[in-house]
Structures are given as structure tokens and as C-alpha cells.
Length: 191
Length: 245
Length: 160
Image (cartoon, rainbow over all chains, first blue to last red; front, side):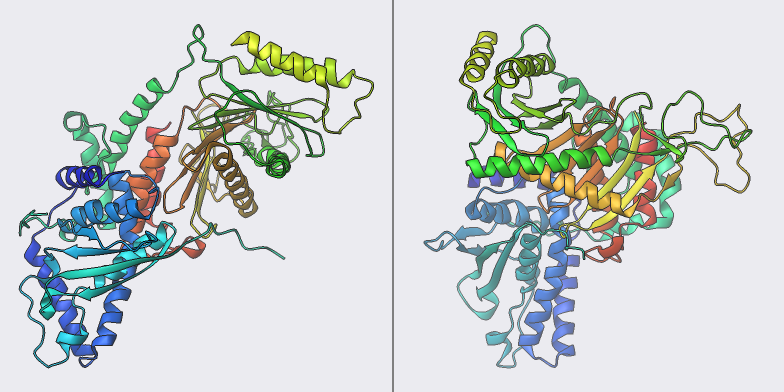
């Protein structure tokens, strides 16, 4: 599966099978959640990052089924295909963005997603408390979504942001690493 | 990527799903059923959110298309691809394995042994999970046996086809091959792997059984239940299959 | 065609849903099929399938699916098998959810039907139900009214 083919699939599904909803509603809802978490955890941004990741994980585990049901795609042949599938189909149909896949590690088990645009972060300015700029990963929910979704298709991964334009960085970059492929589970032995 | 984001079109589902609260279902479905014939011509996987019954009917139409396409049994031009043959003795041991045409992956001898053993077990289970249909309660004469069935009436159920024997797996289909399993009355299993399109598999497998009876069982030096190493069997089998292709 | 039973197994090899359909009783005399005190008989009558059955069904499809992959390659898919009495249909999602249906021998391929159950019923009414848990130990969240009712309709109206 080539990158262009993945892009075509993403475009097609986006056009024909996706219900659209107002973007401001999404942006404001997500922003409110993050802001509330910051308040609830007393600006302990490590905690906030962690909570966002956890929420994303729970979303990802469900969203993957909708992804598969809508896209009808089968199993990816390798992790490179998986990366294209995430960037060009997954992000496309759920957020209408198609991040660039780049910075592959030599073993093909690690890549970066560069987001030219990020609907979650529109209108956002991080709190000016001297710490949020260094500690809060505003869109961290996305890492959890990928982790949850890929776990359901037998891939244990690790994902984290390494830069964010909200913090004044030049790009928004997420690093995704394959930890291992998960084996089939067997029924528990009975005694 | 210069796809500028449309602010009114982020593909995120929230609002519409609210439509689908459980209580709203039944009447809505009925309504959808009624206007279905006029609206749906699409056979693609429907992602309509709030029309469950419609989806179901759409799938019915894809379904029937599926049948029309997937009956490739054209009796005249039969693609004859016989991939391989496996013979399993009555204890589940592999006694013969031979490949005739490439098409399936080659396994190690040990893997074939494991496969034979596994299949032997699964075969028995496929027989044991045959649906048991409870006999309908006879309202007027409770003690009477169910009419016209010669099945285990005493235990209160019948098999789907009461008159027929209860066998284990006979045919298995995958995207790439078809497995036909013929079990002799003595418990030996012949597993024939063919192309999914191959017709007349039963004829082929019966002929193989005949060849087996002739060149294996009638060979005085063949030890029962042991691996088949009979050159004449190999030769005749190969020649016969070649002759058919 | 007749559907005898239907099972869903999750990625932990647990049976999270099972359902058995009884065929319409044939030996009932006339139209007075009212058994006092019993549920009304008919197509829609269902019972819970035996627990041990589910384990055997899982073992069977799991072994066969592994065998198929071994011989046909990783991309090959186990579709169905027949015995002299019934036909078993199989569909597995990339998330390792397994859908199994037992039908009579006259039944055509149910692969698309099982896929539709996944897409139109399971994803819609189980996965997307925000109140149902992500995993379904013991079948929690699968046996909700919307799913069961739609499945019932699908089997009795569309497949019948």
C-alpha cells in the first residue's frame, strides 16, 4: 500500500462516509476539557498529560472499530504501511488533517508525524504561568488514541509529542515507536 | 499537505449520535423500513447513522449480489488445481503427505505432523458441536415420539437433518484453497487441498481412495497405520492426477 | 435457510455473546400452538446456548484459522466449513473479534452477512455506546437491547 493510495482511500471515505460536525464545537469542547483538567489537577501538567493520554486510549480502543468498519481496510503488511494508514486515512477521516510521516528510524520501527495543522489547538494560547510552555502537551489525547487503536490491532506502541507550535516550536511533531506485535491470546487453561 | 481545514467540516462524530438513544429505535426502524425501497440503491457499506433497519436491508442486497457472484461452479470448464494430499490414520497420525502443484506454503515435516494431529482433534469437535434442536413439544400427545424422525428421541432433541449421519468437517473454504476431507469407515482421513474453483472433488478423492486400497492396503509389506512408503502408490497417484489436468 | 446459532469472541478468546435460534416447531398440530405458560412459539424464540458449546466452537475456529494461515499464508482467511449436518461461517476483524454463525447446509456464504453484523450492529450499538465498557468480560455491554433487537431482526427478517 503506497502513501498515495492511502491518501486516496482517506479522501474517499472522508467524502462519502463521514458525518461532519462543526469544527468550533470540537475545538471548544476539547479546549474546555484540557482547561478543566488543568484546574482539577492544580496545574500539575504531568498529571494533565497523563489524563489526556488515558482518555485518548479509551477513545482509540473504540474508534478503531469504526475506522475498520468504515474503511474496510485489512491488516497492514508492515509498520510503514501502518504509519501511512494512520496519517492519510485515520487522521484524515476523523480530523480532516493528513500529517506528514517522516524521520524513520533505521529499523523501521519509529517514525514522526508532523502536523501542519491541528484542529484541536485552534484559538489556543497556553497559560502564561512559566510552566505550561514547558510541561503541557496540549494535544496529548492524540497519543493515547493511537496507542489504544493500535493495541486493538495487535501493536503495542509508544507515542509522545516532541514539539508543539503552541510552545513556540517550529513544528508540531509526534514520535511513534513500535514496541512489539502482540500475540494471539489463548483461552485460559481450566483446571 | 496544503489541505486547508474547513471549520465547518471536522470529521468528528458527536452530535448526530445523540439521535440513537435506545427508546427511539422501534418506531424509527419501522418508518425506515417503509421508505426504504425508494431511497436505497447503494450496495456499498452504509454508514447512515440513524437508520438501522435501512442498513440491514442494504446489507441484504449486497448479500444477494454476493451469492450471484460466488457460485463459480461451472461444470464444463473445470480448473483442476490439486495442491496436495494428506492422509491421516485413525489415531491422528500423519501417514502420507504429498504436494502436486505449488499454491500452498510448504511446511516442515514436524509442522505437517502437528497439523494432522490438530485436524484430527478438530474434526471430532466439529462433529460434536452439531446443533441439537430440541423437539417441539407435542401439545396433544405429550408422550408421543416426534413423527418421522429416527433420531435420539429419548434425549429430546434431533439433528438438523434427522435421517443423515452426523459427520465431522467435510469441506473447508478459505480465500485461497478448499480442503475436502473424506473419512473412510475405518477412520482413515484423506485431506485434499485444491483450488477453490476445482469441481468434482468427490470423484477425485474416491479415486485416490481406490488407489490407496490397491497399492497401499493390498501391499503385503505395508504395515497398517504406519507411514505410507509405497512407490507404486506414488506413481499411480501422480500419473492419474496428471492425466486429469 | 435456517440460522442455528451465533457467537462473538473477543480478542481475549472470551465468548462475549452467544445466541441460539430454535426453528419453528414442526410437529405441532394445527394452528393451536399455544403451550400454556410457555413463551409464544415461533421464529423469534431464542435460548442461551450452552456454555461449553462456546468453548468448543472457539477451539475449533481458532485451530482452523491458524491452520489456514499456516497453509495459505498470513493473508488467507478461513471462511466456512460444512459437515453433513450444518455449516459454520467465520469472519474475523483486524481487531481479532471473531464472528461465528452456524446455519443449515442450504445457506449461501454468510461472510458478507457477518461483516454487516460487525459494521452495522456491533460497531454501531456496542462499540459506540458510550455507556458500554471498552472490553466486554462476561458479555457486559454486548447484550444491550439495541444490539439484540437489531440482530434478531437481521436474522429473522433478512436472512430467513
